[in-house]
Image (cartoon, rainbow, N blue to C red; front, top):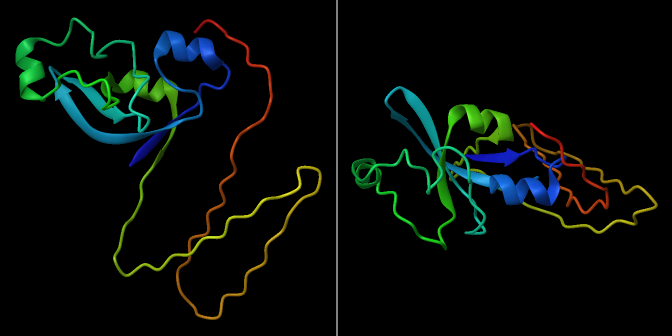
Length: 150
């Protein structure tokens, strides 16, 4: 499972204040419950820039007993952190659940397009079945970002 931030309007300032990278995907590792509060364990695959809010690694809410119980020790290369469910819902715009099946077949095409002319693909399916088609586009837009108070 993965979650993706939707902090584009915060830009670099949001990253510095929150420790979350705008428009970036994080691995969703687990959910835990501490005293009735649901926490989400996430991991930045880049291994750096982690959450700075409530339940972050430096939060005073982590007692030695809790750190031991959940094996939560500092590793600057790991990129994993906890945050409460409320903050997760505030700063993450989507959750993607991948269905893995060893019988699935896959293929991919990488294409480069002219930014001033649309590109098109066509596909002919010869065999009936269930198909998943995904299109990904790198977001390299040069838009100015505005920081707002939240």
